[in-house]
Length: 227
Image (cartoon, rainbow, N blue to C red):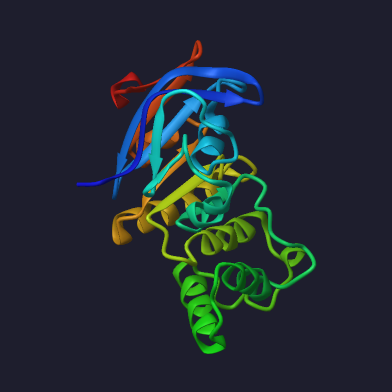
């Protein structure tokens, strides 16, 4: 099985500072992976390295077929198109409808056929239970609904990998569970690997997965039994 993500003895940077030394991680299709740790421990820096926002200056890493330590700037958009990203604060465009948010992404990733664009948007909105919200503006939606739209946006291009950075951080517990159910079903039904940054270790009880913990400038995989 080919790895979607593979880090080998990689140093993870935040700005000019190294926050994690000698990072090793291998993720395959269908994996559900948590990265946990205190604020400032390097969790989000790992995500930023995966999308080539932070450079990799020491060690090796491959993400969705792209070698991060040697990736050319012109190839970074293609790397990011193969990954779905879900943020804590949704990052929807507030000046346009749900449908136009999704159209914006498709058009910027090479889709041109109007019928195919409309069909894809209808499909992903149905997948996340938001098929009646296409014409709503983001401010007309609850936090949970906005995050569902963010998940829909992340799966538009059928990514093999979803990176979710504290996707439940701004949500109440009931809504957080809805988003976790959604991510878990995408992972199980479509085989999409999910890497999720979180500080909420109680999630593991209901949504088991592999766990990496960041602490003391290291990030290592641990067993769920710790919790």
